[in-house]
Image (tube, rainbow, N blue to C red; front, side, top):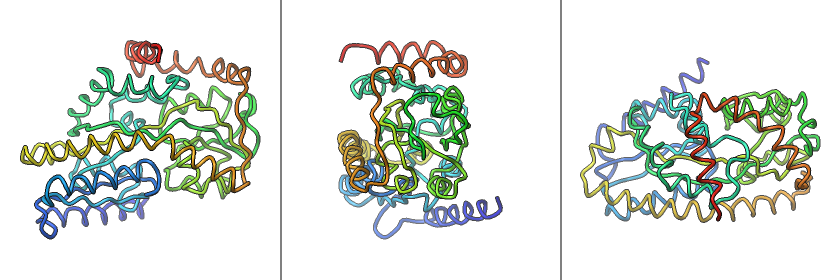
Amino acid sequence: MVLGRLRWLAGALIALAGLAGPAGAADYVIRFSHVVAPNTPKGKAAERFRELAERYTNGRVQVEVYPNSTLYKDREELEALQLGAAQMLAPSLAKFGPLGIKEFEAFDLPFIFPSRAALRRVTEGPVGRGLLEKLKEKGIVGLAYWDNGFKIMSANVPLRLPEDFRGLRMRIQSSRVIEAQMRALGAVPQATAFSEATQALRAGVVDGTENPPSNMYTQGMHEVQKHATLSDHGYLGYAVIVNKKFWDGLPSDVRKALERAMAEATAYANAIAQEENDAALDAIRAAGTTDLHSLTPEERAAWIRALKPVYDEMAPRIGRDLVEAIVREAGKAD
């Protein structure tokens, strides 16, 4: 706890020192902190935004990208953003629940998005825009949604049917919905920082986890997980957010240039997400450390039946009308 606080303060001091004046020829510095590897979809998109932002502002803005929790960990970054110690983040959508905006937890509901097209109808439509608007009351401006992808389950035992989860300690990100999901499967959910997940698996502190393949591969989780099920049961996406005071204080021409950079980086992020995850799956297969299992229609139906109660349990927390609106939008014909 003490070490974590010292680490947070060190990051804040680095960031605040930079706020005292421009770095080099730049008028404004954006510290963009995230918790994944540079070669993931989010990591690559952050770099693309950096390049475009600096180009479109003619160097007036300098973007410093801090990947792999080098500046702030999961539990630290939102507080740092609100305090102005970091200007930009791309946290997973589940992170907004603890902030008091529980509606974002709808994205964690199992099997809620049958396809990427269904997902895009939600994030790019009135539902997605309305959720980003809610962030303003917390001193945050929501700029865009970035994909990672659909998640797979992993453990050191095969996970074909819900009963295979019984008693397993499953690492999760902090999310009430994902906790309920794991309990519905008979597993024991254990919230662990993303930066600590692989070590927790390696040490046997947890037995398994869920992640898109790109996260599983780039973090080396496949080296310590003998089995993975290509379940596509849940979605992992991010909201790119910026400190509202910082954003509102930018000249309008700079904001416009950054919005252009973000729009192009978002298109890039969402275009590469699937191919990055496909490439990660190929790499996991090639490594030969993890047996990959695709659900049969019967197995998939059993997972859906087991996880259906999560909707009834979580609807009062998230908002039943919102859940119904998402299901309605997602269920339209592709």
